[in-house]
Each structure stands twice: as structure tokens, then as C-alpha cells.
Amino acid sequence: MANNKRELFLKRRLRVRNKIKATAHGRLRLSVHRSSKNISVQLIDDVKGVTIASASSLEKELGVVGKNNIEASAKVGAAIAERARKAGVEECYFDRGGFLFHGKIKALADAAREGGLKF
Image (cartoon, rainbow, N blue to C red; front, side):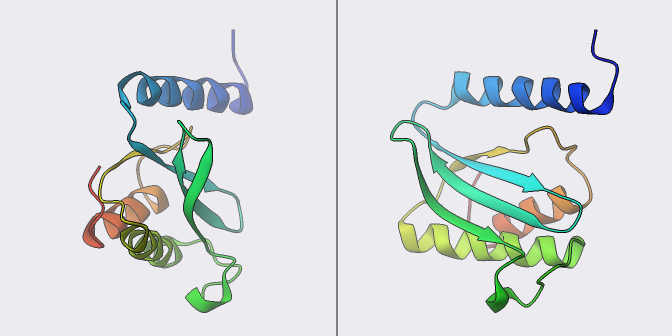
């Protein structure tokens, strides 16, 4: 039985990832990782095993280096949407990992949707 935070997080992440892979049918996966200081996102093609586009709050051109707040998440979401458009991607699945869909994760998803990604 999982009774510490890390084990519960890992179980949640696997549950989300398995549901996505079961229904993916070749669509790309928008994977989010959040740490205590930064947030990053990748657009991954699981069939080929390659990353199509990525964005992170560590990038200097976004102007949010070292910040992990809702504003930084929104900028990262807008950046990944723009890069996905340049790569010719319009639809994907949102893989929140083991993170709950609120706050920073929700802000990133909303900004990516406003930028033109559909998930």
C-alpha cells in the first residue's frame, strides 16, 4: 500500500500515462514536469520516440528564469503552442503526469489552448 507522497505521485502518474497510451492512436503527447523552481513541457511522439518541441521556464527569452508561478506557466504554455504550430501540430493529448490539474498546470494548459493547441 502506497502511503507516502512520492509513491502516491508515481501511482497517479502511471494511471494517467496508461490511460493516454490506451487511447492515443498515434497522437502526440504534451508532457508537463513541474519542480519547486521551474516548469517545463515537451511535445512527444511516442511512436517514434522523439521530442517534437519543448519549452521551459529556464529559457531566457521567456523572461521568467527561476520563477515557478502561474504567470510563468502561462508564458511556457503560450511558447509551446507557438512551437507546436511551427512544427505543424494542432492536436495532442495533455499528460499532466502525477500533478493535479489546477493552479500552474491549469494555467499552462489554458495558455496552450489559447495558442491554438487542441486537447
